[in-house]
Picture 1 (cartoon, rainbow, N blue to C red):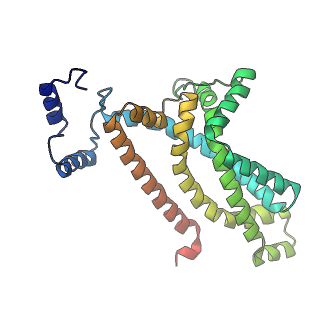
Picture 2 (picture 1 turned 60 degrees about the vertical axis):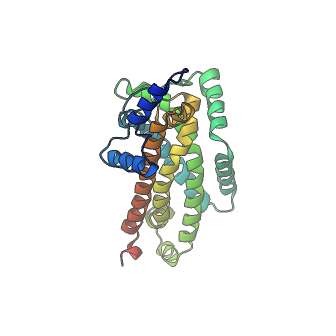
Picture 3 (picture 1 turned 180 degrees about the vertical axis):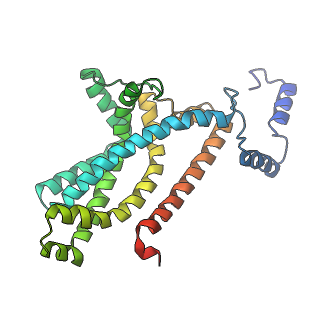
Length: 276
């Protein structure tokens, strides 16, 4: 910031402007006071307000995370139900193999593999870039489909294993045997009675997993060159843009706290046993 010459007068001026000449507790108090008012400082590299930078990047990552979560819910819960209903069959073993593979495969490796297959060889989807939904909804979906699939793979595997375990436990319950003894169709027993009760821990887990999407988005957005929140985190760290790093850490911490609170609230709402 002071240039290569590092003029002492310029350094002193910068220290005064950035409040670096004050004691550490005083610096923290001033920063926290401004943060509570929505002022997270100014980027040392672009000279833009940190709040404005976060507001412009966060929606992109939220859009990517939402699509990834939809993919994870559809495939993860479906495979979990199939594996539980067909316990110890080839369907169960196959679903478990897919789940273990999804958890084990690194995001960056899977992203490169999908780019090689669907972008380079088949040329079905773009390899990188981002188009806002307001400009072209279809192209927006095409640019997000590959990175969302990468993000959703690990989540789908986790949801599959938890859904399977929850469904197996519910299918052993007495009321399920009673429903079958009454002659209810297997589809009604599984979807109407078993799945509704097995969904309680899965919903709370889904809320917590949504916070983990941010960690995956950091690598995924780098691989697919998506100008989102995760890429901004990496760029600010490498550029030593400490004002942005501080603002990002604060927003991430608040986000995780809110998601944990939401998980607790949802668990109470959907589980009647907790209301008493």
